[in-house]
View (tube, helix red, strand yellow):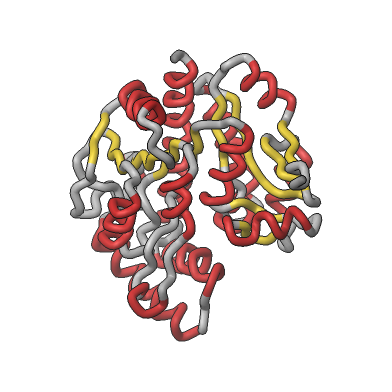
Length: 305
């Protein structure tokens, strides 16, 4: 027989799921690897507060000491924010880390796996991974895309990270049959920027319509989830041309420094942050908060049916 899954749900998450109340999953990589210390702890708490304000229960997910934790206490959040030894876990290494009793922060893909295992249908994040620029030579494509095609979780993000090849990312999502739904606009959002210059495949303007699309996909028996692309709030949005220039410089710096693998994304994000004088970080925080609020509304709509 296969081993029992070493999973621990926080008491309030267990109670909410048992009572049919809305729950929103939150990833931990953004805390451990994405946001600068020491502000990352305050950001993690603020995101949970956003979910609660929207009428849902937050479930921040991580692997700590060989246990898949769904919903973290104060000590768990503090460890995520301060422990520099935490691995960055995706589909490929999640099981091995659990089996070895290790610890790590979960990416979009790993968070989706954990959320589905716990019975959580909605997940809020910043931006998904995707097809990296130059992937035709490097074959660097995030596991997030395949996860969206196979795991039934509604992922709310501000599109894919702008450091990626957005046209190729959308093409791959289309091939995989993943619905990509822009919220309130026809353009696919580009993380720090509201527009990418690429038309989104689908548009919905409210949480109820997004929840209805997710329920219908489930009723049809179609595997996988959906990507809800929620643009960064306008007051914090960066001009697309400025972002492109910063990304180009960051990519050159990564190549010169031999940065590769899982280190690429945090390096590029930090470089763009420096190039924009901290405005990219402000936009990142604003969009994650907006996504948490929208995810709570979608979870509440799903819970009503």
